[in-house]
Length: 73
Image (cartoon, rainbow, N blue to C red; front, side, top):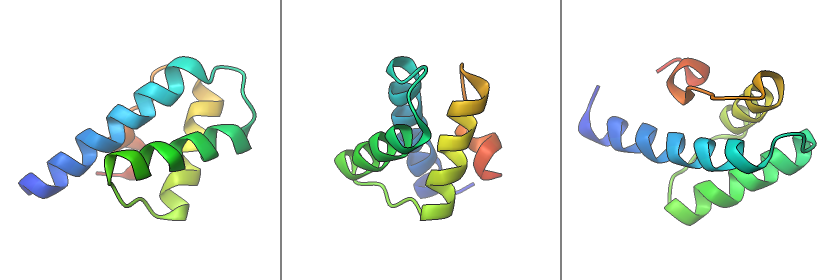
């Protein structure tokens, strides 16, 4: 994995961790909105399908989500 890919994944994971920690019980739309805002704040581009997959994982697991597992990277 390239350094750029590693940096991107670390940034994505940080946003996922932040949203997961305070979005327990929130609707999927809220989780998706907060993920999108977080990615914009840290300057990471995440596709719609990736963001939805992460939101779905947060909603279904109600706990720690590993972005690499969800995104297949």
